[in-house]
Amino acid sequence: MNVFLPFKSIILTICCLLTIEAFAQRDFSKVEIIPEKITENIYMLKGSGGNIGVCVGEKGVLMIDSQFAPLSDKIKTAIKALSDQPIHYLVNTHWHGDHTGGNENINTDEILLVAHDNVYERMSKDNLIKAFSRTVPAAPKNARPEITFTDKMTLRFNGEAVMVFHVDNAHTDGDAMVYFANSNVLHMGDTYFNGRYPYIDLSSGGSVDGLLNAINTAIMIVDEDTKIIPGHGNLSNKKELLKYREVVLTVRDRVKTAIKNGKSLEAIKAAKLNADYDEAWGSGFIDGARIVDIMYTSLTTEMGMVEKDEKEVEEK
Image 1 (cartoon, one colour):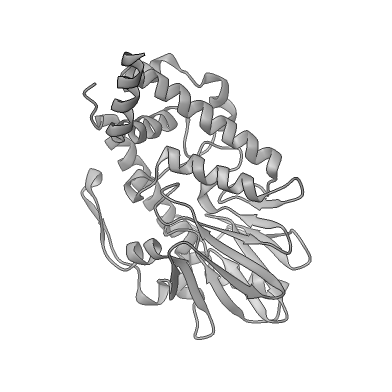
Image 2 (cartoon, one colour):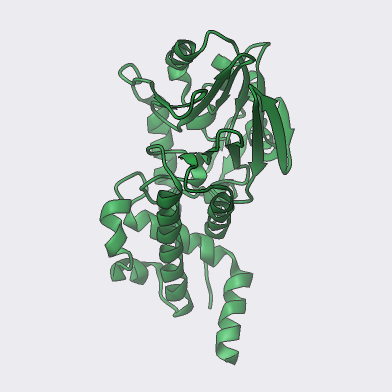
């Protein structure tokens, strides 16, 4: 089968970039930073952008992600209301601006910025987005990670074993999850959009199968009592995460089967394969049409896997 990157997928990428730019230029003056207590020393902060995790204690504060730069003062004020101790660690789950935009404003000599190696690489140089012919400039030096890791690391802080570990090519190529082992709290970053279709950034190394592997990794860690902080959406749990996996896996399999049957992107969209999910799960940034675009592009880009599967079917 002659598979190629469809024009519609290029349009999708452009739309995504325009949406990111719109977020960067929006008025944040009315955004409130709302803390939600998870345990005695761990909180989730909701505002605009990725959910922030905060661990407070006698040794100071560890925070996960920093949302957009214009919200930094509000975020710092919200954290001060939880603890009078200084921030010592800022961990980024990936490189996107709604999770790293406040890094530079929050960073001080007392803070260490932590992220995966690929986050440092993406933030330390200009990135060309070929589909849009647009260059994303390097982040300021003070916003880039100062401690990076390849696979995993553990921070022992405030009586917590804070496990930070990489999941390959999921939402991006630099995703990290953060697990507070003592408190049984997991921050999944944008590998988890609670109650919504996922956004998989293919231009940053993300993939559908990588995302599913990341979700499976999280499921192996959590139990019925684990509190899960998603990248976007409300505080969650294992039951909701299992439902998220079911939706992502089912949609992936439907699109993959249609590709194997020789269906074009337009034909797959017209068939409305995911009509039973679209109303509930397509209400966010990624609607029913866009999730098909993303999955079609991700799956057909992996030509070796697609061709092998087809050959095996023919042989049988």
